[in-house]
Amino acid sequence: MSYVVSHATKWYYDYMLFTYQFKLNPTPEQVVILETWGELLRRHWNYVLGERLDWLRRTRSQIDRCSLVSEPIGEIPDKADYYTQASNLKRTKELFLGYKNIYADCQQQNLIRLDKAWKRWLTPDKFGKKGGRPRFKKRGDISSFTFPRVNSPKAGAHLTGNILKLSKIGEIEVILHRSIPDGFETKQATILCKADGWYVSFSLEDKTVPDSLPLDKIKSATGIDVGLEKFLTTADGQSIEVPQYYRKAQSTLARQQQQLARKIKGSKNYQKQANSVARLHLHVARQRKEFHYQVAHWLVNCHDLIIFENLNIRGLARISSEAKFALKSIHKIDE
Image (cartoon, rainbow, N blue to C red; front, side):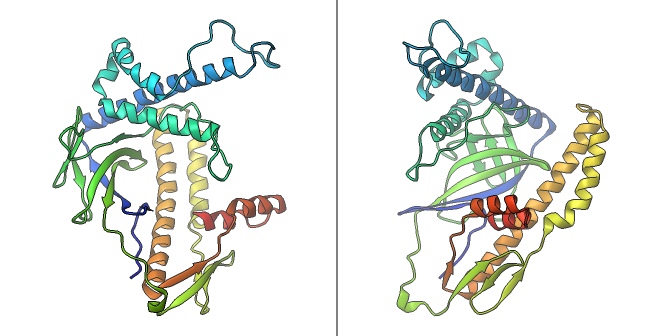
């Protein structure tokens, strides 16, 4: 049997990971705490990233020659990695008392995120590709933090019914619009901020992986081809029109952005209007995601085997950009 699970799904050899997202209903006091945590974690991210970049700048030129660009002089610091920076968390809490109020696991997860981004930048993957250079975060850029354990004895997050109890934050109501399936183990909880409020994403693990359907039991198969005029066309001639949610919202978005440009940057009116623009972008993104899930459910409910082309979206977008042809329509294929 074929099926699609909403939100992120990762398949492994002996288990699956699902991500279920629910909206939170925090009190005004809890919102202040959540925003404070995000700001302090942003500052710490920038500081530890600066440590790594400083070490890299001071050591990238050999000792018997000078760099062609200006470099800082003085004593070369020790190499900064996850373990040295994690051991410095105690010193950070002594110097800046605000970090004592942040759950320790959340601070460590912030360092783990940076360490992964750093390694993706310097170390190529099995295909020889590297990630982008980690960037310093502007105010508001870090709007999420992770509790790596849930409902375990030493966990910082416990979910009981529709109440999520977070260490050093308190109990927050969770709007459970659907129930968590039985037999699923909650591995971690990520608290994140969006334009319309705060959310929690639970990472769920399922040990029961369904077996693949044998070829002799496949009753219906089809191939799909995505394009610019149609969202996709199946092998039997059925096609799905492109909804063009962004194009339909462009005029409204343009008016909202014009109003934002007239506001004094940094004022409360500017922040309110910026939130209106962000909400409009969020609405379009949710429309696209819902449309994609509906199409995916329709396909897997009608066919046991689906064959599709492995498109090079980045290559198509680059060609389209040079030719100034249908760039937005190509990008929507990858969404």
